[in-house]
Length: 452
Image 1 (tube, rainbow, N blue to C red):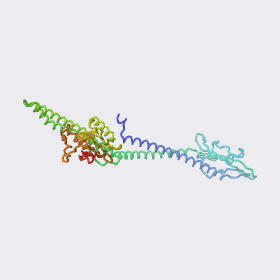
Image 2 (cartoon, rainbow, N blue to C red):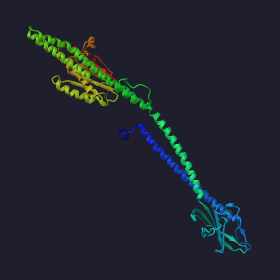
Image 3 (cartoon, rainbow, N blue to C red):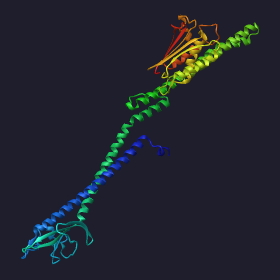
Image 4 (spheres, rainbow, N blue to C red):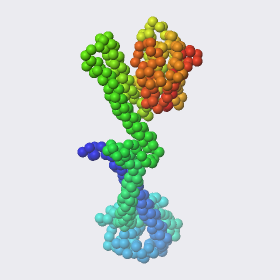
């Protein structure tokens, strides 16, 4: 039922092409049949005129110079009874009438009165048989100079013409039918050959679903290169995200072992200083919270995908700056937002919010009230966040990107902001670097994301 309601592409193309081919060949056959029938009728009319001229050429004169037809005609069909070609001549106001020997024993009466020089072609029923009749009016001058009017009529049976047209029609449709069958077979093979790459893609996807392959492989036509590349990108994206979840959960389980062991030891400890135990508990709980937050944010990073729509960076930067203004109201942050309207980020909006949010919050937290955010895009996206704080020693540039490491231990925090940003940038195949803000004097964070 589903196949009948939703036919395959091959079936659709084959049906459409067959209908077009059938209509074309049918119209071609009708046109050729009509053209042949018209040509045959025109040839018959031309023969009738030739027969009339032959009658005039064979006409003789009697003693008074009047028209007289001979007893035997040069065309043997006029002499053979029921030959299918008949002639009549009438003149002198009905005083003269002649019929060809082929009309022996019959009186057809197909002759019509015509003016001299006038001719008329019509169909006529010859005693159960249809015929084409030509009536032609002439003037004959006798020996006394009188002009006598005569009418010559020639009739030819249409049965041979109909048989000829029928034979041509049978032959025509036999050849057209054979050609149609051959073209349908060739067309089916061409469609099957042309759609073979699509079947290969479907088979490759089946291999991937069954676990026997991890991506689409093989050489495909250029029309399918975009499709196969996007599918492979989606597969790699899904695999990378799944792997990040696995790694994050594994890291989370491994990281929580030590704090849990410490908490268990504190709980089982029978003696000790209550203040020391409370401090240890708070420290380990904070550490566990830090580990859980870091791993969950790391696992949530969407990563780059070729099918992700691009979004404008400027509204996101302005939204984050507005939110941080409320959090750090006392510091009266001086923002320098140098982001063009056409700057785009190709990825998940949540990832961009998390990335910029961490970098801009760190600049507010560790700076002295002056933050500059720059973004520009071309083939790639470049982000730069600077502050006017005390900065970070150069030997700690790499360390601050690691989870839990904070260059400033005086301010509260979990030390995961830069590491989460690094994980997001890594998920998009980019890079993040820590440097010195030359103009503001604090920290400068450079982010390069491909395909901005």
